[in-house]
Image (tube, rainbow, N blue to C red; front, side, top):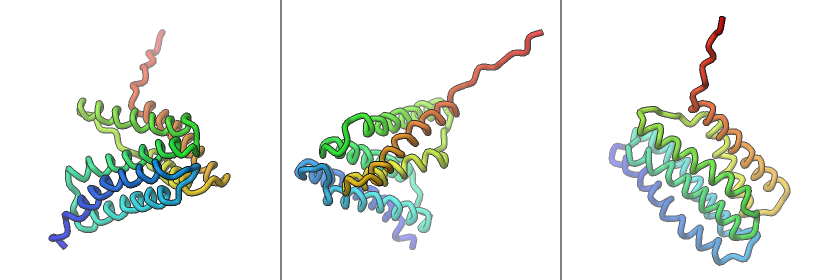
Length: 179
């Protein structure tokens, strides 16, 4: 098993290398949906679960993986969201809200890390990201009302999680007792 410790990072690299294929499908398919883009998005997304489970199973967690894995997630989601706009599936506000949340969160994590503080992704953050991934992938596949509902639920959860993280990080003013 020790000889396979490279495998999770290799899968992460393959996920990143699959993004131009996803972008190609979005660029050439007429929209508002694309089966090829949706399947590609889903396949890349599923490999995230695979490489994470393998990293734990093989005790192969690396510094590269801690950086590249979330980067691959963010790039996949960004490619998918831009793809939804390019396919004409959604106008810009919903996808841009999710993208903005990710950019702000990544920036905040980086700034906090540079100051010696660490912000952990919590259950709400994971739920909003998972919902955004599922909603984006499904919206590439179908124009059904339930796919729309899942996507807009993801937008709402991303806003809620952004406010939640801001409240977690932002120092609250101290109230002094006056006599």
